[in-house]
Amino acid sequence: MQKLSTSFRVRYIFKSIAPLATVTTMVFSLFSPMVSLSPTAFAADTGWNVPTANINGSGNSGWTNPSYAYASDNQYATASNSNRNVQYTNFNIPTILSGSTINGIEVSLEGKTTERQVGVALSYDNGSHWTSTINSVTGNSESVTTVGGSSNNWGRTWSLDNFTNSNFKVRVTSNSGGGGGTYSLDQIQVKIYYTPSVQPVLNPSLANSCGLDVALVLDNSGSIGSDLSTMKSDFNSFVNTLSPSTPTEFSVTYFNDTGHVAQTFNSNATVITTAINGVPNASGSTNWQDGLIKAQSTFVPEPRADHPNVILFASDGQPNRYGNPAQGNGSGVDPDSLSAAITEANTIKAGGTRIITLGIGSSVVQANMEAISSTDAYYSAANFSQLQTTLQQIASDLCGGTITVRKIVDEDGNLQTTTDQTPGTGWTFNVAGSEKTTDQYGYLNP
Image (cartoon, rainbow, N blue to C red):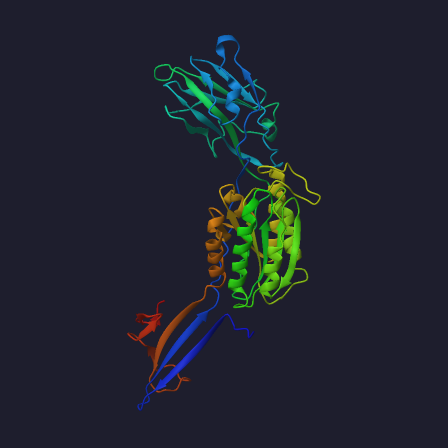
């Protein structure tokens, strides 16, 4: 396949009997370059965490069935009088990476009330001291309300050891509300927001080239389940969109508890789609770090030094494993696993490879995906039925192509002399069945 330069000019000369010539210049850009944005401070969170124990107020100061607030199941912990309190404990908050800064704490209350409301306070030292109380406003119909937030530190500076099971507690106290009644709590949860000590580096922009070396990285963890067949089909369509119509080569990597290379770089679309179809059934946890390591290994040795390197990384979950053999808690989001993924992505980006991330479904946290790529390199598919459309958008962004036309009038018909050339204003062209007219500078806007 003959390689075309990324930007070239074609000049058409039309001569009449008089020495008047017009020159039409068309500039074809086979690639719309992506511009990397400067990375901003990346903030993460622990996800929602539920209690597994409680300390109920003694005698008439406690709640009825306080353990019913551990799960959202329409069974309620209730308080029908003022000043009833219960302390929820053992939230099993994931260990936050050393050196991280706590930005805020949010408490979610799922419940309903007949006028009575509650106040929430936090302890960081096993109940010896408490923050100021923040009152919740709940309606008569069951709903979720939150107190605190991503930038609310409840009036203090937190250390990481404040969130161990032995130190962290949430106290819920009933008040009189607007006229008594009963407060019914279906579930209580806590989320910690923090800025990790490991921060993303700049995601390199792509040089102008429609011929790319693309490492495809597919999440093969258990959460994918039966949607794996849809992912395979849509990635095959993506490959066939760029190959062989563009000089693009692909490699294929998949990951679950660890990463695996299914196919090194190849320009044959059939070879690549066969590798995609051969990815095993979904199982295991989610190891972003090892998936990135294995994908990057397909660039060694460099497939083609004159083609930009891209990793297209797709996942429907959160990183909860790292290393090989795998470490990490294996569920939810594990801060150490996220940190390891960011660290590996930083190494890859610093070496000149651009990372594009594709988040699938509602379980993906966009900020985490952007932390291993960048805000301008993240794509989202709300579910697997939208995956094909999103991949087509990525293909268009990588090799969309534009044509810019400029009409120039040359008075003496000699293209080597330019002092007599003027913009061809008002010339009409038919573009895809639509009439377009050049502007005052001779340009035909697409």
